[in-house]
Image (cartoon, rainbow, N blue to C red; front, side, top):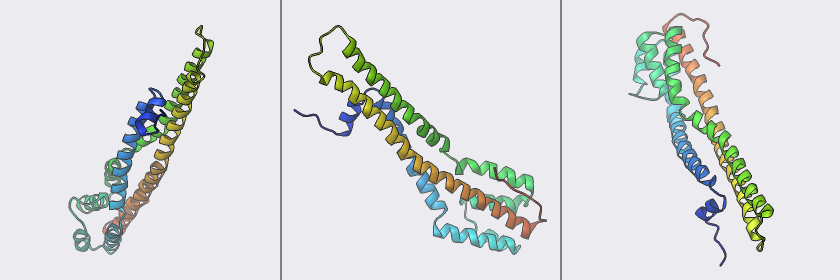
Length: 210
């Protein structure tokens, strides 16, 4: 009877390393979905229009219109703008506010980066254990009757390698997209602060670029 190629049979054929790979792949999917929803909500057409309206109000020095364009608790842009209105567009206040908000824009970035790095390493570990298993059969004292005993170890090595690369690649692309969105958010932070300083306070040289 031939073995199936469903998910759990593939995990079993790939050896013990496939279980942690399955775990990190689930984490990767969950985090990617959460971040995708966050960035889609933050940079939707509706929120982009509100953001531009807020910039115009700040540049015009119209505090009333700026306050009316804010929502509570609102997005990270609302929170930064509210801080500028309440405490003034001061350099120290702006830097402090943006550093506080980075926790939301860069949330789970470290987890995705770790998965991208660790998944191929787990795959290589599975490769080593599979090859060792095959060599033990070839170099052992027991007479090798069925060549499939050796191929099982080689198959484990190949499946583990492929699994690690698949998880890493599937995580890499969302990670790079989310990093680009975080850079976009940082640019908008700068624009909000610059507009607030133009309309609500004296203009100074200020930047939060890394």
